[in-house]
Image 1 (cartoon, one colour):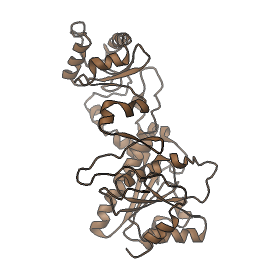
Image 2: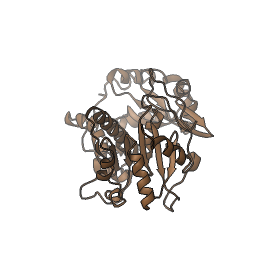
Image 3: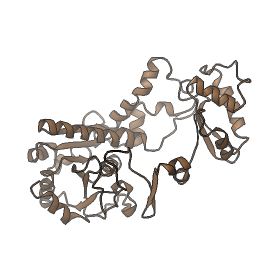
Image 4: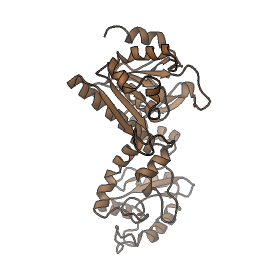
Length: 371
């Protein structure tokens, strides 16, 4: 089966213009939830494209049609598809779709109910709108990168999950789904301007609330979530790592009891940053005395707020992850299964990954008939 025809979004038609990063990840989420996502592929792969072929997990469950959008025939074919879809998503630089003759005004004229989702790093407008950038740059400008470093060290670059996926793809998905709800209620579509700087800054509101109370400050290593010894990772005797996140006092007490440090640290206030470096050294020395598995045997499953740091292969085999079937291996490729889960409209196994242009004729037959 090329796509998942079950799920809460069954019947939703999404046209995804070829791109990288957030847009295809958004399309994967929608396809996982049952939407009919048609990927408009390029006729040929360019030198800058990262063609993963059948390993392109973000294309799973989609159908593919290959069009030359620089030709009048390709543009007209796309507009015929636009007439019969609910959502179009694109991740070009501002103005590119307009130059192709496929901007929002043209598409909404062909389909007034269309939700036109636009994904960029900097946004459609502003001094940096047309500048190149990547995840690290958007996080840096939005403020989201600030708390990732330790005192005296440069900020640590996180995986491209916070910007591209968290601040980008997921905000685009929320935006287009909200747009669809509005279009179904009013009969009018609209443009969704989703940018990674906007989404990343919006995600900061959790920390901004803590900042307003003084629990997060502009000095690294002295805030609630970026410096305490009880919210860190530690190296074990075997070179592996574990994590502790005993934020609440009652969980912190459990951690100290499990580590046999309750008496030794009885006079140390948990939230006093002046003591954090010293206690961090004590924790680091202690965790280095046992292997990761030994710490798991002592702490995992307790309210000490503990978890081992696992690589993806290890994570897939962990008893909790295996019991919930979080990961699966499809066509030899390890990948996470759809999320979240739905009780009333359970999701099928993820659909297969299409070849470029594989479903061109079928899509035209399906979509260009009267709905």
